[in-house]
Amino acid sequence: MSSTAAALPTADRHDVAAALRDALLRAEFTSDGLLDLLGAPAYAALARSETVPALRATRGDSPLETLVRLFLLQQPVPRARLAEVLPLDACLDGGWLRPSGDEVAAVVDVRPYGGPDGEDWYIVSDLGCAVGGAGGIGSREEGVVLGVGGASMTLAGITVRTPVASALDLGTGSGIQALHAAQHATQVTATDLNSRALHITALTLALSGVRAADLREGSLYEPVGEATYDLIVSNPPFVISPGARLTYRDGGMGGDDLCRTLVQGAGEHLNEGGYAQFLANWQHVDGEEWTERLRSWVPRGCDAWIVQREVQDVTQYAELWLRDAGDHRTDPAEYAARYDAWLDEFEAHKVRSVGFGWITLRKAAAAHAEPSVVVEEWPHPVEQPLGEAVRAHFARVDWLRTHDDAALLEASFRLSGEVVQEQVGLPGAEDPEHVVLRQGRGMRRATKVDTVGAGFAGVCDGTLSAGRILDAIAQLMGEEPVLLRDRTPAQIRTLVEQGFLEPVADTAG
Ligand SMILES: C[S@@+](CC[C@H](N)C(=O)[O-])C[C@H]1O[C@@H](n2cnc3c(N)ncnc32)[C@H](O)[C@@H]1O
Image (tube, rainbow, N blue to C red):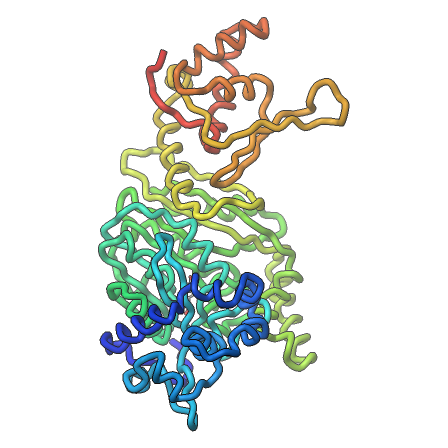
């Protein structure tokens, strides 16, 4: 366990958190209020860790400007002015603020964060860490607790949000995943190796007006013993680095071992039908297929859907994380030595590049003999939130598993919403070189189809069975219907698996 020395607000003063929350809401210190005040460019600049535009936009002394300077931009503000905006003595007493001469300064960053249903939430983090990003974090202390980053939002977006009894947020940090989980899980457990993170999670939940979680300190699954959950989420310290330095990102287990251990361990902690969803980094090692590496991580009894979103070569990777920690702003010789150590580590383990992506496991019902493990690369933009698309993927997997080709030809399908056809070929050519179906929603996939596949998809409105449609296409093309019924199910399966077609009934006409 690691911890920075700076004091934190008291976590058990719920009365103070509630009074502070009321004051923040009254002043419209919310994500919408912030956007209105700063304007889109300054608001977006904050997300890139650039504070100058926001400082320029908050020179006045309205309650909202005062709070933005105090809680997001780490500016001390005059005591008398602040007393008009929030319950000053209670906030000093509860440790949210500290006196600084005639002024008062914040002890933690507080960032307004809008929930999916318009909730006004607040993410608490260490000072200078609410708007971390390309410019480097505000503190380089080992146990520093960061606010919300791009990875946090990605995981929150892909999480399946069906109502469940129990959820585990492993490596909770500022508590953002626990905050989301509390909306659809009766009981939320949040763990972290860093006790400071657990303290900050308690503050995030209290200030957001959300019920407290069961907070447990320790590494990986150790703090939860043999407990099982309906949902496990983790945005773990997935960075593959030479030695642990920063608890929030460096797993400290060597290579991608922390992510592997996390994924492998999930099987024992999931209830039947439960989901485990992780962000992860994985090594691409000379002489090994990355997809096989990932397949070997999937625990027995689980279906898996693994999506590689990006690959960086080892130099890009080292630079990304050196900059993330602000190392590029230190002594050049120190920077060079750190960079060198990173490349040494990769060279020693024959690592060429590193993949970034999402891993979703679903604990299958005991009756499923053959798990479905899909490992794929999809680096293109998707439509977040994707939680419903993830749930639907596993529902389609179940459907395909229980329908052999004969049953598939008996079933009828509907083309999913917002699928269009694109014809690709040389300008002026009479016939397209190939036909692509493209989704406008969810994963926004594109897939090549042949003439039969395109014709088939176009006719699918849920009325005729697949077999009847293929017979009609065979007639139009002058083909033998039996041959078409024989060779097309594989293509239909792919279209179903990827969500272009939705099964609607097993026995339609
Ligand atoms: C990248 S942060 C994610 C924080 C937050 N869940 C989010 O989505 O923004 C990773 C968190 O995992 C914690 N952590 C590091 N090593 C851990 C371990 N071995 N077991 C559990 N948590 C760990 C860190 O302290 C940090 O809070």
